[in-house]
Amino acid sequence: MSGENKPLVVRLSDFRNQCAGMALQLFLEKHPNPVLVVESKEGDFGEPGFQTLTAGGKAEDGIDADTKRKPDPPVDTDHSSAASTDLDIQVKPMPKGTVAQKHAEIAKKLEGAGTAQFVCPLVKRDVNKFASMITVGRAANNDVRLNLPSVSKFHAYFTHVKRDNAWFIADANSSNGTFVNGERLKSDKGRIKLENGSAIRLGPDVTVRFFDARSLYALLTSDRPFGDTPDRE
Image (tube, rainbow, N blue to C red; front, side, top):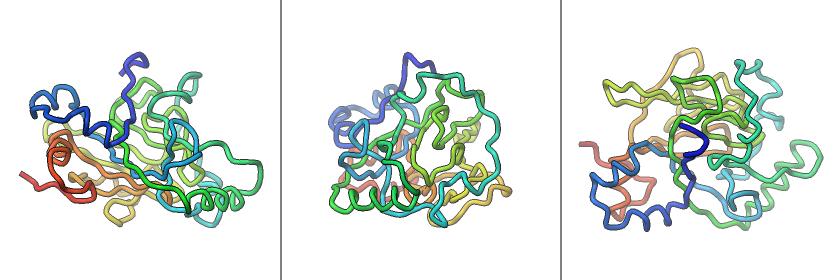
């Protein structure tokens, strides 16, 4: 997908209003991609008015996610505009200090903050060379960027098997782990198939839920909360 046609991360309530009364076929034409539903704390955490922490946790051992991990595979870095893309989900830079101090400051802000949910389209952008995967991580040249210390530069990736219309996620040897429905993925064991409503945790601080377009529509047109798994057809 070109930089001129970047998908937007939008508030779930706004997305629901935009799609109100829309027939299924029209919805699928306009929103064919699966999504990640991000539950986020709101407050003075940076653009665009939200961030991806769901708890006031800290990176394992109180250190940055990449301090104790092997170098990431080489990725293209000549994308000066990537840091401002619509898919960046990030926090404001914290004051200089130890990682523990930064996490303590974030936790303090989180304590009194409200929560909101956002819809992040799971799409491929033109910021890296991995054509067969949708990457997630802290670096600016990921398809979905989560700019938090506990998220590795290249944390995990999604793949799609078209013939089965199946989506998978794999951990990219991250330091703090990728979890699906509470089970930690082993980076040497390959990928795991995602079901609609699967809860994906990236390290200690970020939790998202995966939905394909049809299941997203079913939830938008029902009264069920997004923590529920849609009925399988």
